[in-house]
Image 1 (cartoon, rainbow, N blue to C red):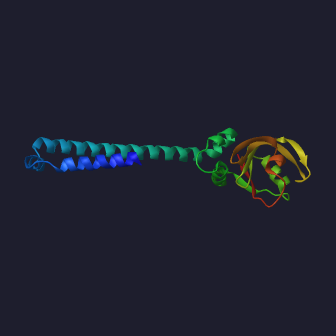
Image 2 (image 1 turned 30 degrees about the horizontal axis):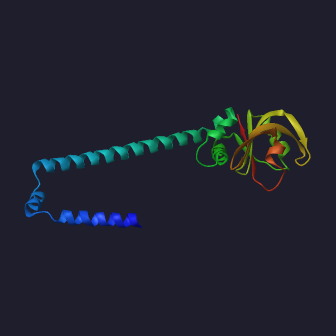
Length: 196
């Protein structure tokens, strides 16, 4: 409280002193010299240039950042197929959702996965070079070896070995047979993306 009162008193004292100028000083202040005008113009020009440069730099940085995010998301499918760990580098939204959106366009074939058709999906996967299966927007696996499989009672099929991620806040790497990663058959949306 004392500090605030001290600051207030100092402000009043300075305000009173600046108001007690003589007539000559007041007239000198009202008639600016050419030198004073030039200084003011220079300061204004410098400030305007600095603001313009700063705005331009900020816009350029934003454009570059946006383009790099677009490029990384547009290559997400091919990068994931080459190395699943690239999914960890995807910036922005949920990387699994980003993969799904682009894979819908780029995949040679997209199949819904259920207990009723899992055998057909896996048989089709043998005809393609890559098969990626997603569960909702939280799980993604890439089949590593279609011939290395383990019988699953809940799926009623021999489920192949795969590597992928489960998203629980952050991506958690999984390496197991797909039935242990994509879960038991239920009403969740599961899709198989087949690529040549």
